[in-house]
Length: 73
Length: 147
Image (cartoon, rainbow over all chains, first blue to last red):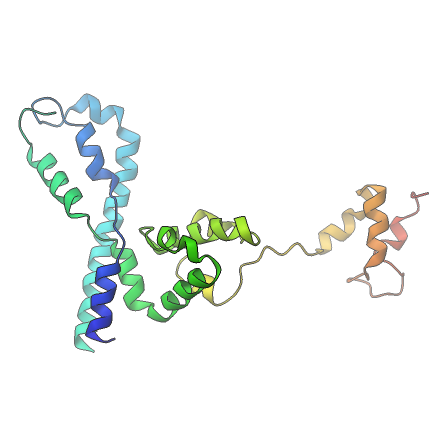
């Protein structure tokens, strides 16, 4: 793969909207701390969002591996 | 709004503002470049006005699900897993057409006698795939009750 192809890919990669980041706003109280009651209220969404974040973490490792392989080839 | 920005919220805001990339899409484009290129070509060919919508979906699976949904609106439906995003890679879509086959299965053949009369008569138009043509139409022996 040519460098310009990689740059084109990097420029065009779509955005990922991780729900865990959006849920942060919902589980914070007035003092900026995590509110346990709100966490309990959003527990199901948080569980799904956590799974999504974990997958994103795995994708990060995979992306690093791919880019390293690309750099070696 | 919180009175102070907690570290958690500050991090979330920064990451949201930076619009983090879809890494699964990045990986797919690098490691499965040929099939990704074919997928993009399919999108441009069959749904050019939906190109942005489809390719901006965050994962290969959601891109293919979006493609399947728009494609179905205009052409014909794909197999269910494509609509749910329950497929592995672009190759699942590019190496064959995932058309929903509505063929006549062996089990269907045995249910023919329970079909309504009009449908039973229509089966005379096709050859029996399981027993050759020796009995004439598909449900020859099943038509006794049709008068």
